[in-house]
Image 1 (cartoon, one colour):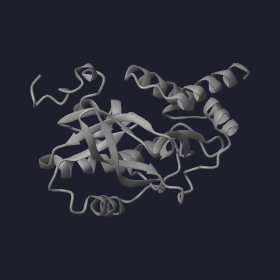
Image 2: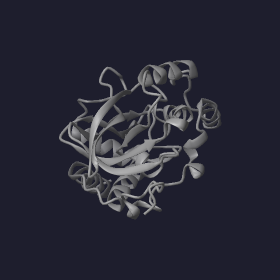
Image 3: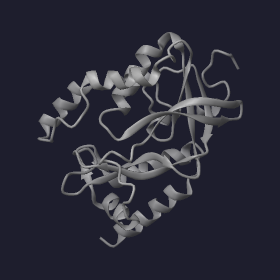
Image 4: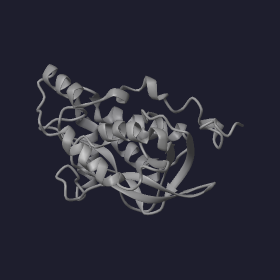
Length: 242
């Protein structure tokens, strides 16, 4: 296996991660979001301005632009990162878990009247995912794309975590739940979470389809998440009573 092959440690991941050039998120920006919102009569103005987002990016990456950067993915960043990376490794972070606590009421997978719930990375008992290595030569461009995709509005904090891999521990950038944000619902009752996912929908599809997609992809990647699997079963059971 060539040392220049991004999949040299995990050749079985080839074909499971979408190439950057095919990703919807590669050129995702506020202009596209505004157009989509106007087409569907959705609320606007809730997102960061480009200047605000750029300031957050620069603050996070201060003194880190002269080296390669690892990025931890726990959800769609694993299978559709929209990033050009030089290496991928399976990884685990010890102090966070996937939790469905991110309110989605802007029209994508839920609405103001019937909010959906999306996955976020929050303090917990551990999370398996992937780390992607971004080369320092392309770091400025790739992180701009990353911030356009992940830092649309408040809700996440950018932090650096120790991610354990079979080839050593790496320090990786991750976006974790910001409990000072009103879109993070840390005290959401489990039963409410189940009913929201079972019933919410938006222009991107139903909240149930989103959860089912996460479960399907995690299984495809060989990642078993007890909490997500249990949530999926409970949502299916709820839908069966509707």
